[in-house]
Every structure is written in structure tokens, then in C-alpha cells.
Image (cartoon, rainbow, N blue to C red; front, side):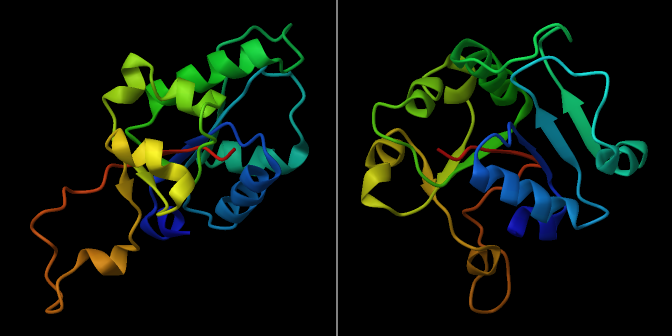
Length: 164
């Protein structure tokens, strides 16, 4: 919700049910920029309900695959996720399964160079040990007197979101 309020571009594969809910929520704001990274080729017939968002320049579908790749596989998902890592400036990862695909992806050279924000959960201990920061709502980023905290860098504009 914070990314939508701030108008940051959100880039994701939007493949899980939760990610689809986030996608629908983001689309409610006519100013929200969204990059939807596909794990298959871009099909010539997109659903009509996306046409307006595409024409307004606030929704972009990208894919590293030819249109002939019509099925998402574990291999195409991995390639999609690598592209997503390249596009995002930082990541919001609420939960990463220890030893899972997402944890493996975050070991990539491109991902290691980018900040990760996560939730304060015991299951995210590996993320926190690798340098992830605990998410704090933007309101918490200010001192009691309303001035920005001097220890926090300016948030980036392109945020990758992964859910597992």
C-alpha cells in the first residue's frame, strides 16, 4: 500500500494469488506505474481490461521470451525473476522460505547489490543476516518532531516485490 501511496513503480511477476491481489490493488490508482514481468512470451491478445492502463502508460508487460513460449515453467520463472532483479532498485520480500528458490535468487550478483526490506519474522533470519532491513512504515521514518531521520537514505523509485 505504501508503494502505491508514494507512486513508486512496482515491478513483479505477479504470479501468486497474493501477488495478483497486490496487482489488482495497485491498478485501482490511475497514477500507479506497474511493470509486469512475465514468465512466458507476450501473447498477441491481452485481456481487454488492461488496454486502458497500457495506453495511459502506467502498465507495461515485459518478457525475455518470444511469443511462442506460452507456458510458465520452473526454468522460465527463474529467467523471469533474474530480469525482475535487474529492473528493480530495491526489493520488498515479506517472507522467504529458508533454502527456497527466492533465497537462491537473492544470492545472484545482481540481487546482492540491491537493498532488501522484509518483515520482522523469525523465518526471515537468513534475509536479515544477509543485510536485509526490517520494514517500517514511512511514518516511522521521521523523528518525533516531523523531520526525516538522518540515517535513512532516500527511498528508490522502482521496487521489486516477491511473495512466496
